[in-house]
Image (cartoon, rainbow, N blue to C red; front, top):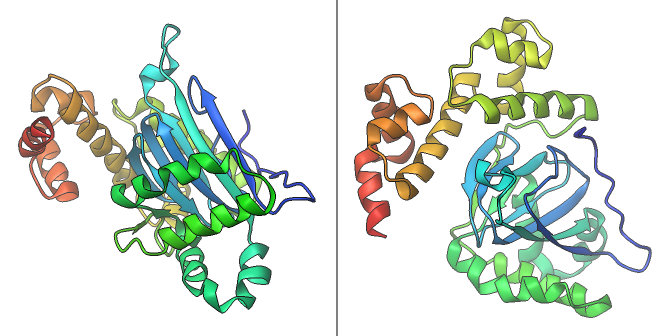
Length: 289
């Protein structure tokens, strides 16, 4: 499946497209589009990729993305098993950038919402509390039409604008999508990393996936993500380790090996660098919750 520019089909009678998905797993590729996108996850879990940012997601996740920001949601491996009965559910709301520039710009009452949309240029992840407060309204949008649906969206955005704990996703130096060829190249790289991060990935391997020489790939990856390939790979491994520490009955050492760390001390050092605590303490806290 090619990861290309996505054409969002807004009708002439509507400035908002609201869709509900109920799938065995999320199947959208690494893609981008010129519309804003608000995505709510009622049920599912896995990893969320937004620009140069990667993190886990779970039920209740709520994210607002700005125009031309590459993204995709990938479920964890168990969703793809033939006998899986898991479901991936989402509510996706898309609306054009012109909505801010031509409509909200003339409404002084919409200043807070306009500021929210500006912040969302590189992606915003909302707090659990704020997400829960708009969850019912997000699901109601599916049943609404016309002006009622538009007003419902504005009410949600106005509420999200008050979330002081919303966190930026992609770094402000991230380069927004420039074309489908580059999007396809990055998709191949990310999918290879997702399928192989538990094992050693040599720079020569990943560079060949991108169709580049190792030195050129290192420059390309750093330029596109503002992170080295090794740093990005370690973030992916640490994210998986956090999930395992909270859900699987394995020792810290076993989990480190399962996530691709051949040295226990290296795993401990990187985990503490990313989370501020040791894997053992993270496991204790997660089990306590």
